[in-house]
Amino acid sequence: MNYFKIYRIDSGIQIENKHGEVTQLIQQAWDDFINQSDLYTICAQKSYEKAPLGKIQTPIESQEIWAAGVTYLRSKVARMEESKESGGDTFYDKVYDAQRPEIFYKGNQLRAVGNHGLVRIRKDSTWNVPEPELTLFINNSNQIAGYLVGNDMSSRDIEGENPLYLPQAKVYDASAGIGPCLLVTENPLAPETIISMRIFRNQSEVFQGETQIAQMKRSHQELAEYLTREMSFPQGVYLMTGTCIVPDLPFTLQAHDEIHIQIEPIGTLIQTVQA
Image (tube, rainbow, N blue to C red; front, side, top):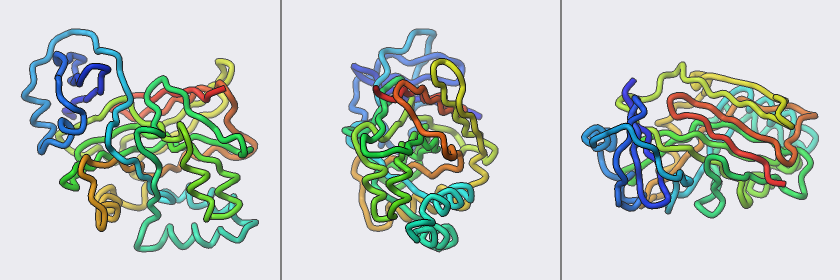
């Protein structure tokens, strides 16, 4: 598959081709560059050479980050289990089979954390997990124009207590992991594309899981259409598409845990839980 990786650098933009060659620094605003029509063709027309990348920044400026929930059967089962005591399990059962998907606001540049950044867990939560998610970039023409790796940090005990607490469980400082780059491809990612996550504690692996995006109940286009149906995004928007890699109790994140989320050919998003 042909593809290009677009990196937001401290002083501009650089693009890397599948051979590991990069462009010279592009002096253009991130918002303007990624919202150009036919972004893949624009990348293909650039000149590439063997050279180092600059200092990589979080690939976001004015974009909002949204997320879809309960798009995998495993996620449905996990959410029903955690919210059964509160009586909220029926909500997750119904939304999995409903025509309308669950879509919620996740954050913006202020809440976002990039590659090798520090994500946070809430002080008032006792059960915190990362959620690895393929993330779509939908441009200002409502077209799916690229892909990123997403980490939907979640406080599952808060969400399980009452579904109405979902915004507090999902949206807080340093809760939206995204990166390491924006991948643009000639064709959509294959259904066999693997999402994997490994968590390390004191240099030892304490969790590992993987899935294929083919396990999603809903299509990427369906989720994008619902998000943009009654909302405009002048600088484009990122949409996390849900997860089915859900660590079970008694696992919960601790300070200094290192999270590795890999989706090839996008790459690996590595983040550490803040002390």
